[in-house]
Image 1 (cartoon, rainbow, N blue to C red):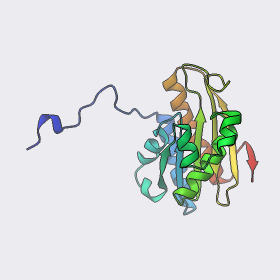
Image 2: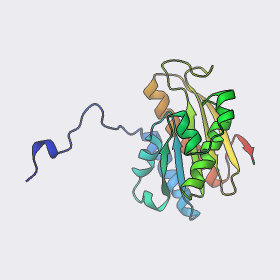
Image 3: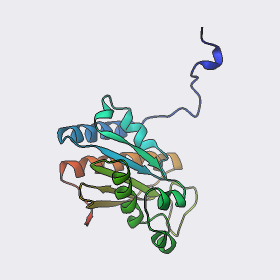
Image 4: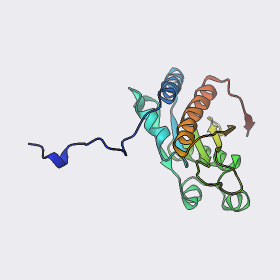
Amino acid sequence: MKREEDRARPGPEQLEFLPEALTAAGAAHRALLDRGATCATAESLTGGLIGAHLTAVPGASGSYRGGVVAYATDTKTGVLGVPEDLLAEHGAVHPGVAEHMAIGVRRLLGADYGVAVTGVAGPDAQDGQPVGTVHVAVATPGDQTRVHQFRFTGDRAGIRYRTVEGALSLLDSVVRGSAEGSTRA
C-alpha cells in the first residue's frame, strides 16, 4: 500500500512543456530517426529543459543519448572541454563557448549531433551581454558546427522556453541539412 507521501504531488515546481518546443522536439526526433542518427545536449541557461522536451517525445531513446547541464564555468571546462582562455577572454555567453559545448557533448556521449545553449536568461546582464542574448550551436558528425545567436525579450522563464524551441528547431534544420547561421570547422 502506498503512503500519501510516496505519491507524486503536482506543485509549482512541476515542469511545464511549451507546445511549440514539443513540436520542435518531435520534428528533430523524426529527422534523427530518418537518418539513423542520435543527438546529445549541453545546456547552461535552460538547465535540462531541452533534454526534458526531447524525452517527452515517445520513442526518444531511439534518437537521444543524454545530456549535460553545464551551468558552472568549471563544468564547461572540465566536462565539455571549453577552453579556459576562451571563457576568461569572452565569458560564458559567447558563440565559441556554445560551439565547444556542442562538440564536447557530442564526443562525450558518442552522439552524431550535439546541441548546446548558453546565454542570459536574466534578470541581470552577464559578461557584458544583455538579458535575452542566447547562442545555440549544433555540432555535426565530423565536428563541423552551426551557430545561431538569438535576442529574446520577456521574463526569465519565457527566455528559457524560447531558447528550448530555438535550439530544437536549429537541430532539426541542421539534421535535415538546411540550417541558417555560420558554419565553422
